[in-house]
Length: 530
Image 1 (cartoon, rainbow, N blue to C red):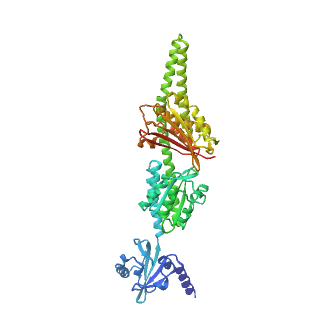
Image 2 (image 1 turned 30 degrees about the vertical axis):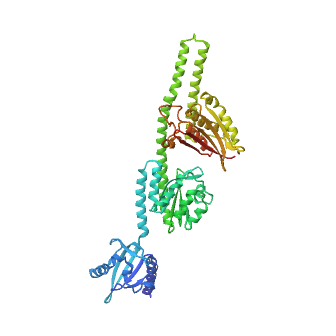
Image 3 (image 1 turned 90 degrees about the vertical axis):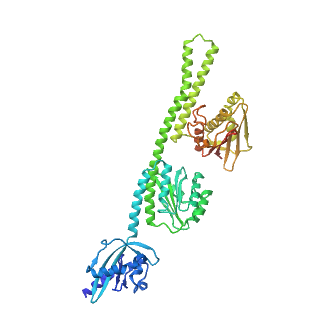
């Protein structure tokens, strides 16, 4: 009775074992196939019993397998344990190959020999090892990248095709996202994904997974029908075109968090199949690496930008501040040495000193504003303002400059424009910078048009001159600090457009420049409706 119980217990253990336990006779016909083998290979016991063992072996190995078994039978070795042999491969009923480890033993039963095989599917372990190796190599690649844009591209190239068919890596910008890099196994689809970044910052709908990440930085997984969900919750034309083209079946959205701040998101797409729990863990590891690398790259960019800004500021101060300081110094020393000057000449010198002081004060204000913009400390207090009043007040102080250069100023405002949300003083500063630039570069006798027109969601303000214009290759740089179209004829520190851009964007508007050499320049910006 005890032997009988032991036999039953052992049979039950073998039956429920997760590893495949398979027995075959001397003719290599399968005689036993446990539940673990059914799970691993996909065959039922009824289907497989009586078939030769080769059906479970990849076709390229089948011709040599009988010889290996025969040699083992003649060797006199009772068993070869798992790990003593090199890694082998099995094949499932659906034709899928998988890596495996196996132990084999032989037991004589009278004149017959029974071979038993215990086989373990090591697919998960191999995938884990490969992914750990991948993450190690990815860490090295990301650590060697300099600059946030290069890092974003590196991450996108690592994600595709390792874990996904397509990928978008996005920077967080306020309550929206700006695509910084994209990749796809199909070059045509990749071009469409690239257009998402070119379209600018996207404010996603509340039902879109990226909005969920903004509320709570946690992964969002769409196991199936991802395309339908994303198309329903998106409005950006470039994003819609890309999603229609790649038609993702499954999508995974991961937050990029660094120093406890959400700095971006990693969106992964699969056209076929779904992301499983193992994929999620791997993707989270990649997202953590990406967030760390991106944060480091941003810090590197910040340091490099700060150093460049410091050098440029030193150059500006030494050049633009030196001239008025020298004028004040020269005039004041002359006045001290020549007390016999008449009142008219003395007044003229004092006026020149006042002009130099105003020039220095203006430069210092600009430098302080740039510093506030860098530190995110530019404070605005927008209130509902009538656009026509805003323009009239802004241009009042500029009329003496216009008259001095014999330029006409034409104000064109659409009737019945709605009020806009604006900090009156700051927008007047931005307008003053734009009109001031137009005055500087307009020829005598020309006309500057200052206009305002309505749009469905905002009001567009424009300053159009007939000056020499800006070359096409220089347009992308017009908002760079300290940049001027002619470095040999400095007219100011080159901060006006950069400050105007910061002021407009702080209001939630946008600013742009259109120009053609010899035809003039149009500077425009938008302000949201009240």
